[in-house]
Amino acid sequence: MSSKVTKLVIGKGKTTGDEKTGWIKRYYEVEVLIEDEHDIEIMKANVEGLIDGWLGKPVEAKPKPQEPTGKPEAPMEIEQCFPKELVELLNFEDQGNWIRVSPKQFLGSDNFARVLAIVHDLKGEYISAGKGSHFRIPKVEG
Image (cartoon, rainbow, N blue to C red; front, side):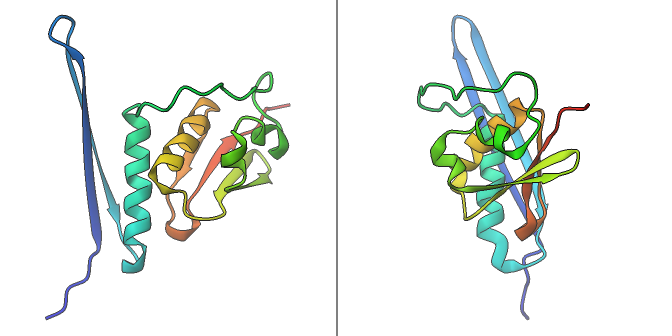
């Protein structure tokens, strides 16, 4: 009898604080349906990066890239919101009301979390679609 993996469940938590101010425990669990078993490692890394972003994984203190005023209107303005080392890993496409940001290659959980944090700052979201997974950021209206 052979078995096929059809679902992946990943959970992560983080406790912060101290005895004086109190402890704050946060836990997130994400369930992903697997269409192609060969995508398991990619999906695992993407979900871990997503959860790490939610948990506010500390990132080294680096100067924040200059952000354009208001919400970005074009792919070039979106690129300015990302550090150069991330821009080199991403494609930026104008899709009408949205800018689609997709990886050129596997990002790994740390880079995924960094990209996700910037996308969330720009009121964007992550679209999980297997190999077609991407981020999308709304454009300025009018």
